Length: 261
Image 1 (cartoon, rainbow, N blue to C red):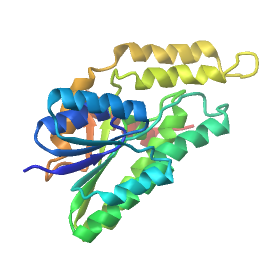
Image 2 (cartoon, rainbow, N blue to C red; image 1 turned 30 degrees about the vertical axis):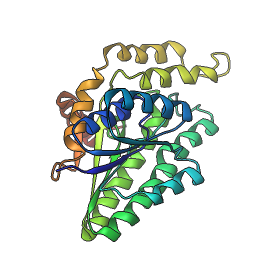
Image 3 (cartoon, rainbow, N blue to C red; image 1 turned 45 degrees about the vertical axis):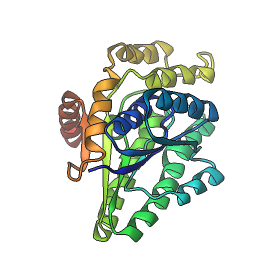
Image 4 (cartoon, one colour; image 1 turned 90 degrees about the vertical axis):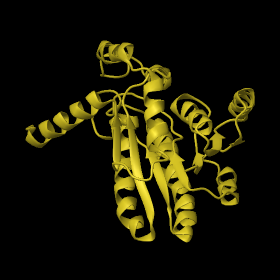
């Protein structure tokens, strides 16, 4: 059955591919982008593909932009908008750390609250938080982003219990490392402030960790999974993909229960 789906952060990456894919499946998409230029580009692609999509700019940190959500009726809200930045937690500038929380946690929760009020009033619907495997793991020099996604995990788990009595489902999707450019930009960003002469973290250690970015997955695989899960009436609370990453996360979690310091 066709659903009306509202998704933030559809200007690039997994969000964009998923919005287009869901529209191709016949769902009504309300797709928002952080910037006007992203909106223009997505409008052009939707038109070229003959897709009926409502597209507008919604910077989730902007109260006036968020207020636009009140004008729309939808069945499913996908909190996908996020930013990414790495760096050693013992040395990351706090303004950078706060900036990530402002987008990935505070503004994300504010949009989810708007969606929750609407869906509770209807007595049905679903909120999907785009979390990450970073919300379930701890990787050196990815700490700022990881901290935000661990917080999103706590928000989603709590809201799932609080909203189910109102007929509203809450779920997370936790992508592994996909080659959208999102992770690469994060790795680059920390060098804007990192200085080998001022910081004790070894640059070569960070560079070694970044080698893993050479083995990222094909984004289409994750997009296909999101297209499957988001409109589904029933599915697991958490969808971690690909499966091999889910298995690794479960093993790592068990190790942390046994870890000694």
